[in-house]
Amino acid sequence: MSTCSIDGSIHGSGSHEAGRLAAANHGEDDISAVEAVAARRAATGASGWARAFGVLARNRLALVGVGLVSLFVFTAGLAPWLSPYEPDRITITVAMQPPSLDHWMGTDHLGRDILSRVIHGARIAFVVSVGAVLLGATIGIPLGFLSGYARGWVDHAVMRLMDALLAFPGRLLAIALVAAMGGGLLSLWIAISVSSLPKYARIARAAMLEQRERDYVYAGQVVGESHTVLVSRYIFPNTVAPLTVALTIDFASAILIASSLSFLGLGFPPPTPDWGADLSSAMDGMEFMPWAAIFPGMALSLTILGFNLLGDGMRDVFDPRHYDQ
Image (cartoon, rainbow, N blue to C red; front, side, top):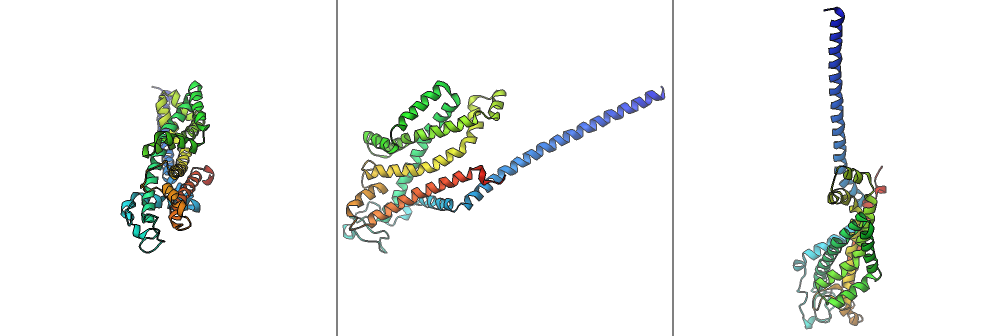
């Protein structure tokens, strides 16, 4: 065997070995890059909540909203244990008494403790608002997603239905529905949720139209993902921000509409402790016992204010301009 052939063999084997080492190093670099990306994503996800809480903590009005909403939920959940008296207990001997140590918010014209009625009224408002908001969102959001994703005649039909509902003022529509169905919890849920359907559908449709043209949706279509998977796994998580803000603020709207209906006598039948009904019954005696209207009105106003402030704070949390680039 000649020296040239030996040198060529040695050189060939050396080049092959060097190529394998280079490939191995390149593979390790790829693995390191993937691990680095995964680490960055994990760190971003872990710090996302911290940054969100940081944005919320810097907004003092939002913190006030958090406090008011927390107080409302706490009162509604523990109403039977927090109220000093039964809310419908009638004691004529102590009727129309001003606030005192025995009755911190006074009594009404039937001798019922106003503090107890305000506390139990929070529970009524909580049940009505949660049920109405969830019912409206459960129907309106899927309709909006369907309209924005399917387009065509489906989009046209859904939006014309929403336009028809928008032709009526929300409170007027709720009054008409409750008057037709009668009072009670189920009637309030249906009336309030129907009046809020157009808002949820339009917000969901706008979010869907924005997201469906993104590259990740096209990539999912290329790899053969079904429409259900595309909407539920890829598009829906990116539409949470506007929907969360709308849901938060809509709690205030639901409580206000329910109280308005009760004020007009279309809500719960007496003697159910309800802020709107208590305000209505206290109107005739404002000159003699103003506290009977002041305290339920304060509870209603502070609760609505709390949800509105919290909704504004949630809008800031989801606003990218509040984060460092």
